[in-house]
Amino acid sequence: MSQLQASLLDLIRRTSTEVPDDVNRAILDSLEREKKGTIAESALKIIDQNIGLAKQKSQPLCQDTGSILFYVDCPVGMDQLAFEEAAHAAVLEATQKGFLRQNSVNSLTGVNDGTNLGPGSPTLHFHQHRSETIAVRLVLKGGGCENVGAQYSLPHGPLKAGRDLPGCRKVILDAVLQAQGKGCGPGILGVCIGGDRSTSYEFSKKQFLRTLPDRNPDPALDELEQDVLNTANELGIGPMGFGGKTTLLGVKICAINRLPASFFVSVSYMCWAFRRHGVTLAPSGEITQWLY
Image (cartoon, rainbow, N blue to C red; front, side, top):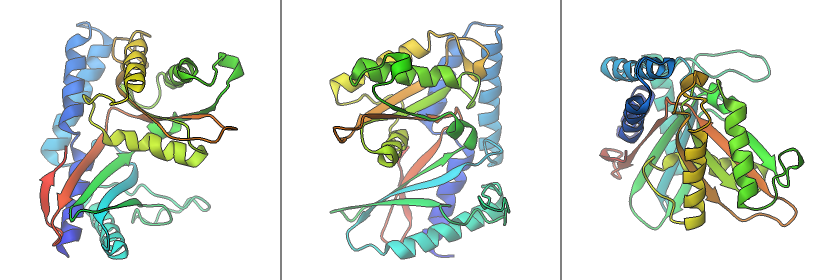
């Protein structure tokens, strides 16, 4: 096994079995805020116990180990094909060791070959930069939370949502309302305003690479993030839809250019099992730093 493959295997293991510290703190803070003796408190206690056991036993947080999404910032000239080969080998090894469940099926036949390899699995996003640093971030996104993602085209008549930030607010909160009781809440939203249908969803998922406590550098988007978060947590949906004060743990929003004819708002939903970790790698492939 190459050093790169070994490092990616460790990244997969940790991502599948340990929630990042920022997410863990948000869950514990939410547990403190919930009313004692309620179903919401019990749900968060079970989530906390699940997190502890998964980390202790180095076993997956959830039976659905999710879509495998690598985000790679790499130097100009790095052999991306060799990296992809190492990533595929690491995914196969992680599946054999049980860090990833046999979770990927052929969309036409329904056949599961037990490898987690195939068209689109894993998915790798490469971004070149003028630095010698290799940074690899991994998101494992479950199917339950993926099912409650939503994309809106503004203006949206039924919600009276126009092509402005108030209109964006309406459709984002509608996505939260439609997801209640589904997607294994409390959830985290990644939102993109603008783009075409595919890039809008792509950028919405990239928002999951941000930490929960960070603040948006754009004042208008920062205000919208905080407003949606606070409003959603006043809806009374709560963990798993059982009621309570914790419907969302975070909201992250970006805006990208669009065509005048289109105005999409894409909402990606992440469950409480927010599986996101990252590393920086030496040219040899050895891990030099954990990013979360």
